Image 1 (tube, rainbow, N blue to C red):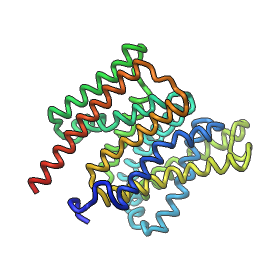
Image 2: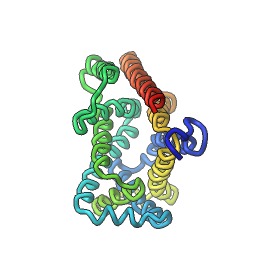
Image 3: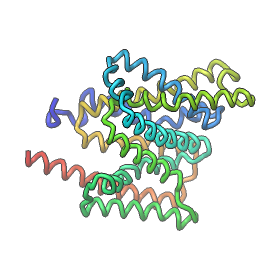
Length: 302
């Protein structure tokens, strides 16, 4: 199916994209359920069980050639090891944020991430920013600085989440890996350290897995499923819908996070937050409008 034939918001592709972003958006609820374990143990389980599940999918979906292409290159393995550290950092900060009452700030991180990627695209790939894109970045920057003025510190959780994942995207741009095979390699590279950490926890009597109950163990194992399924759905959506529509759909993730943080977790939404989020939403609105305008212009030219 060509890019011009891909449906915008109708069909299997958009439904898969919707499923992926809804799962990612509600992930905070799941992390609350496994809050009986520490952030690093949760991260370790997410890595180990994701590695196991993606390995099964690699063979089930016939992706052994893609996997061999990744592991047969020392350069590719090095880049994937670096990307695994970046995504693990993103994961553990998000896990900690959810279980320490900072889910609202975590949602801000995913709102501003596309604009951080714009800046990194300019730095690493020489991608030029037009005036409208520079305006959108400036508006969002003012929004972030607003929290510095009100609270005396920058929203480091939001900035860390967005920056780590944006740099992860930069590294993965150098490695055109199959999503499932790539995730397996990343998780496999971190699995030994995760297992060692869990053995250390067990020796110190601090390991939750196997020491609380079967239901709790099942929830920890389920982290692998919750990590892998949205990735598969997103990969399918990327191949079967317009990329511009997929780009707009990504804002479902932080929007759901935002609603859950305020309405379910009961986190305070202050005047300072209102000013910051309003400015960020305006900046993203300007950015999205420019993307749609450019896409329409390109279609007319073609």
